[in-house]
Amino acid sequence: MKPKGKTPSLLVQSTGMPEVYDCKKATNCYRCKSSIRSGARAFKIPKAQSGFTNKKPCCRECFSQILEQTKSDIAVLEKMLSGD
Image 1 (tube, helix red, strand yellow):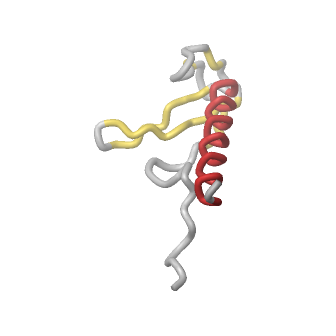
Image 2: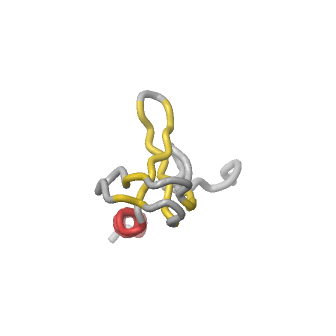
């Protein structure tokens, strides 16, 4: 039997997909607290809090670390799936 609908990504299953955006005003990264200057390209990462989803700003370096961790998590899951 074929599953219904689109196959979900682990990145979007519960809180939504990260998005790229250009900062309209200077802000701070939610992880490292470094300044993200106005006009710089950054990322908004959905964070579930108190039943609501809020998109927190994230600098490129922190997003890169998050992406690497996600890749590592997926590699572990793929290994589990293959039975090794």
